[in-house]
Amino acid sequence: MNAQHQRLLPVLRYMVATLLLGPVFTLLALNPVLTDSPANFLGPPAFFMLGLVGWYLISTHRITAAIKLMMVGSWIAVTGIAFFSGGLRSPVMVFYPVLILATGWLDSAGSSKWMAGFSVIVTLALWLGEHLQWLPLQLVAPSAVYAFDQIMTSLLAAVVIVFVVQTFKLRVEELKETKNSLKKQALALQHSEDRYRTLIEWSPGAVLVHRLGKIVYANPAAISLFGAPDAAALLTKSTTALIHPEHRAAQAARMKSIINQEAIPAATESRFLRCDGTPIDVQVQGTAIDFDGEPAIQVSLHDITESKKLEREIRQLAFYDDLTRLPNRRMLDDRLRQVQSSGKRHGGYSALLFLDLDNFKPLNDTHGHALGDALLIDAAARLRKCVRESDTVARFGGDEFVVLIAELGTSQIESTVHALGIAEKIRTMLSEPYELNTQQLASANGCGDITHQCTVSLGVVVFAGDRTPPSELLKQADTAMYQAKDEGRNRVKLFKNKAGLIR
Image (cartoon, rainbow, N blue to C red; front, top):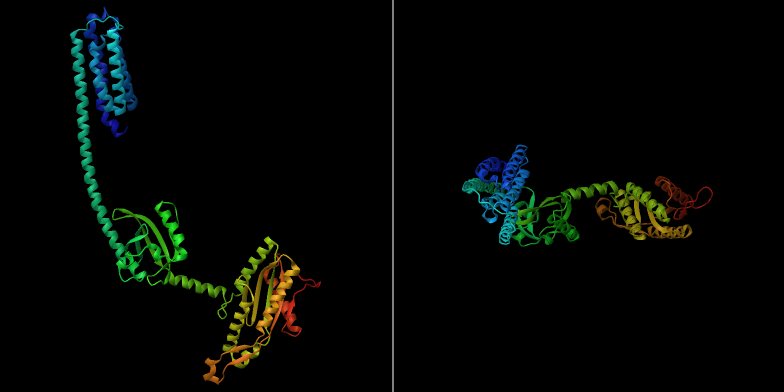
């Protein structure tokens, strides 16, 4: 049983008592005329039955059903009694206003309106029936019946009004308590907001608050992160001005999702701009808040520029040669597998070129490793110029390089001709003299600039998207390269299998 039903129980008990006791007194008052008008006997038992059923429903905690039964049933009973006991002059007509009032209080204002409407219709119908003499012949009821009905009506009206006033006062007290509670919550909220602002001000993490892209707050850490002279310098900027152009679209979409309360990752990596235009890598997290009483977005930023730089350096060490900045064996193996997978899907041919500088060792032995490193760097730069950006040039180790040429074509013969043409271009370019600057070594051994001639031997293997392991393809290209050396160096050799066929 809910609180509302609990408050209605006393009124309902009074109504049940009225429905049970009222018919008894009414029958006693009507006794002198019952023999002349037996129809009057039907009303009191009807009310008594309503009282019994209402008492049963209340005892079984079916309060809503009890209210509807007693209100509607009483109205029907009153209407029926009025029809047989005098029409508009019937003693029960005084119950209509009380029933309308009780229905509005116990059930709803809508139900009260419906009952009032039907009561008006019944009243007009009784008037018309009396005027047209359609109503049964009526006998005058004893004055005791009128007195009893008036007394019961007054008492019921008083009971309803008393409970209405008590409930109203109770509601007023509840509203006062709610008001006091809201005041305390407002004070607590203000205190919490003050503490929150203090924490944000002293937080080492950068925090911005913006509304529709206009920055309205920046804590000291944010001022420092963006290199602004003061908070006012940031408050003149929009969020767009602080986001790197490459990341503006993504951040705009993220802000829109936050405003629409859509699910998004808690944090994401992005790139912003300091006030002087210097890019910074940040981890950014946004959330919708109320700021100064209006909706806004709070953005927390964590500077990850150094960690991203370290990550790139680690990747460089893991996948690139430290001297020439070319991909190393690990990255070459990964890209070779990708090319094989693509060839398998599209049926195209690719080529692997394994090359070795022919007379590199004498340079190292005569002039030292510093000059040898300079030649390797120059050779790497020349190799890059000989191929497309989509191709891979890798340093395999020492003075050995590998070139991976992808997507040559779908014809093996045409692809082979194309690969050999690229290999010849590389051989020609790498065989041109190298002008090596030894200025850093001049103070030690008195040497100046050196011109060094260095030819190259290349082995070529053409392959499609087969299942040959990358290590086997490298071995085949290496075999062809050594065949080129054995045949006199400074030449290109195409790998052929034992049957003398190109792969």
